[in-house]
View 1 (spheres, rainbow, N blue to C red):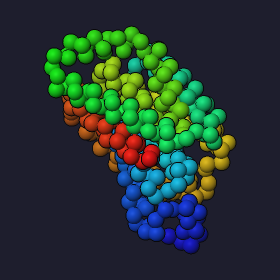
View 2 (spheres, rainbow, N blue to C red):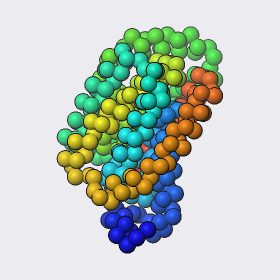
View 3 (cartoon, rainbow, N blue to C red):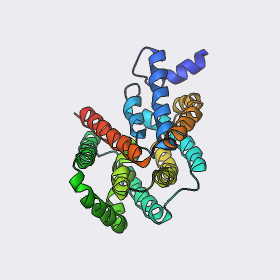
View 4 (cartoon, helix red, strand yellow):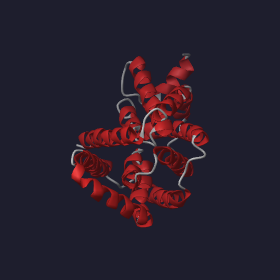
Length: 272
């Protein structure tokens, strides 16, 4: 690494003196995004920001990750291009962008820790409720009824959860949890689950660009860091695609809800 590149990266205010640790943590963050978006519809992607925040300031982490999110989004949309629930997607994107506009308007005033605590608590509730039903077979009929009701009310629920997803995605890159709360109860086949969320995240991440530019989040250092981390994405994308095609719906939803609990606990822990 030459002197000019080193000084440019130093301008990122890296929160560790060990550059090897920085690149390992940053690489793991990007790998989790690629695996998540290509195979799990964002179920594990929310790990990226908490990981990156251990080595970078919050706004710098957002600036470094967004181009990488977009690169992954384009790739995963191509892979899953034949799988999406268009009836849901239009409402999801519209409400998600509305939430992002709201985030852009209040980012200077919102208490990020409070938002993370609320989302984390909700994620824990959803995950625990799912596993409670798994171990309570008598609730099977009720679960089928809930699925039907959730599918009928997709517009009303999009107004709440997709707006919250866009909002939280904009200010803390945790939009994956609210969108899972929206999608998971409808029990969509995992291929359509992943494909629908691939398109959703592509659109809302593209919508962030002018707002992040307006907030002067992108710098030469952040863009260089993004470029260096970019080659990690193909490995994560192909691994995620390979993994999701070799598991059934039951295992898929078990894993998705397990990570809801993990991420919820992580968000709660980091919010205090």
